Length: 298
Length: 292
Ligand SMILES: [Zn+2]
Ligand SMILES: [Zn+2]
Ligand SMILES: [Zn+2]
Ligand SMILES: [Zn+2]
View 1: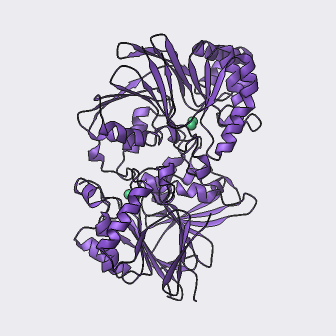
View 2: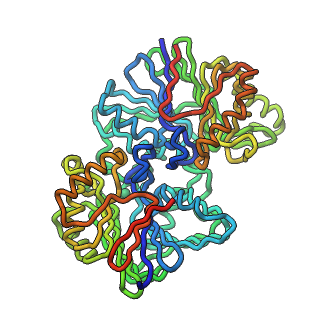
View 3: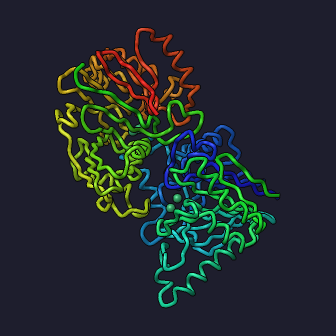
């Protein structure tokens, strides 16, 4: 059994479009997991989803589409209404997402389809759409042989990290996620959970994340900031922080991801270089997320 | 000579950004057009192109800028929360639309909603942001501004207006019209658009689809390239710039279409709009110059 991780969009915060950013790519978050199954399994609907949607309708293998959604910030969902398979009534699209108190994914998705804002006729969205809620810590199956588990990350609302298991292989996506130390509690429910014993809460969050990623083949990790320009309360991490976690979890490969929209290719390379030596010593393979790149496991 | 009137496209793409090497000549950002006059900059629409424009403004200097909206489709507003000057307390950002000012504010507020963004409403952004209802004949940055309804209702229930704009220098020397989202049908609305644009020095026009594609996209609110060029010809505009490129269209495709259309309409002066190119109206003769 083989599990392939494909990157269609690697940029954070918003899509960008500069020639000096094209080596790594300018589309916002979209990642696909491919297995022997014909159905589609895609994480997030940033602009990287658009060319992939066209590719799919031109050579469609299944009418079943599954999306696992990390959170509802624009860069992760803005392309969903224009995903071309949604325009075919034969297709079924299921969205798996968390359920924050503030607003559900379903209501936010439907709000994107409002006639005043949607740039295509809403009648063209003809696929059958299902919404499923998943909790942090929950494990569920897609098909017979893909198992997915979740972990609430330190980011606004209820942002979910995902671990996708297929056979003996695991690929994980941790985006978006900030360091939690010193009371930097960004996720829904975190400040309340930390009340009384913040140190214990912070260590539990961290240990939980390490356990969640344990022995994974590949971890794609939010490293929006460089090691020396971290703004922890903006909700993102750095390459050095990502490496710490991945080393502790004995992850085989770390892929730095969610490149800042102002980062040039040179900046992304510098971020990767900033952890290369230490990663080598620690025995963790490191790479930078690149649009169109795939990692095949098994 | 007369007063200055020029445009610089920061976003030429329709629907959704399409950033890739194969779109880099014409650009992959959603709609944003900067209008350059003798006064402060005026921007039409805040698609993602506006982010790159925002990167050119230094934080240290107070920014004074007008943004006029054609309509509220995501591809024309989505870049606003990422326009750098909106984070600077010294910026004055004036937002205009023919919609009532409070409606405009409510409509744009969703972009800054705490579920979709790390922000907490447009009201709480650092810049000094004001909302204005535009009236026909208002003067913005020294330019006379008028507007018209375009053919851009999507589906039978869609009653949302989409506006086309005309900008005229105070001395009446130069005119520019903009219709980024308009489906050229043989109807009254289109005739009004032609009358509105009559004799313009520059006419910017939606040309999202090839004629083939258009056959399956009738009523989607956008023009076939052929129909756009015919509109430019019928309006007797001195130059037409075709925009709202389909997100799946590559530079090569546009280059081929250009050659085909040139042969088909030899008497009409037009181009496919390119990002970061300044189209300067001068002595009824349009010059374009590429800038970085
Ligand atoms: Zn993000
Ligand atoms: Zn986020
Ligand atoms: Zn539109
Ligand atoms: Zn549009």
